[in-house]
Image 1: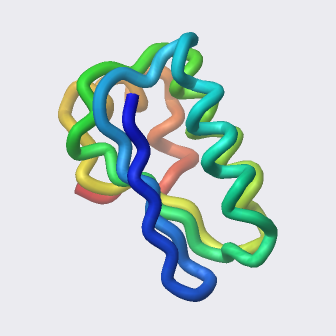
Image 2 (image 1 turned 135 degrees about the vertical axis):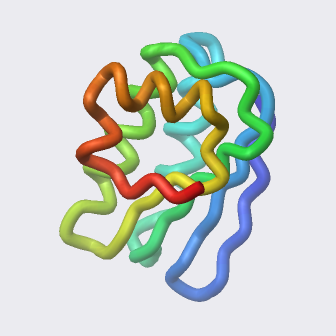
Length: 99
């Protein structure tokens, strides 16, 4: 998996490409942690994500939890297969999912 980071003041976007699974979930966890406490708005751009496992879904939930009370968290440019998984697990009802 590849993660591209863009930070603008207190807003950050992490663009993910490749596979987010048990082998790569730690990379996303580390990238979110490295953003620090000054980030109040976090966006995960999933346009180039090719696969997500339950370990990846857990990282989405942990990122959302980290941002709770600090600002906002959203998933953008979400592929149809990711939306399907989010819907089947019920996570879509607890996250801002755009496009």
